[in-house]
Length: 80
Image 1 (cartoon, helix red, strand yellow):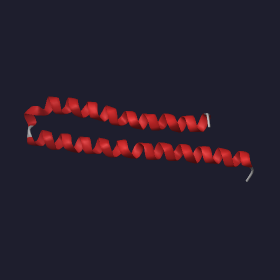
Image 2 (cartoon, rainbow, N blue to C red):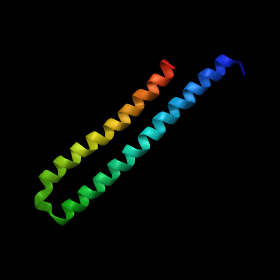
Image 3 (cartoon, helix red, strand yellow):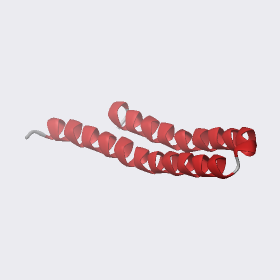
Image 4 (tube, rainbow, N blue to C red):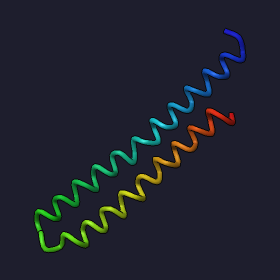
């Protein structure tokens, strides 16, 4: 394998790993937030509004981490 092909291969593998590992944490986090919110609503249905507001805010912060990982992966593909 020539060096240029190896370089392209390494960039693509690195980008795939960055996106994959960067999405694992937020995926687990969103699942745990959803589970906690549904349990809280099940125990106290009157508090649905504030629980949903806090759940959506928490999910947005967790998804921001996944977007950062995607941007790093894109930078690895096109800049590295």
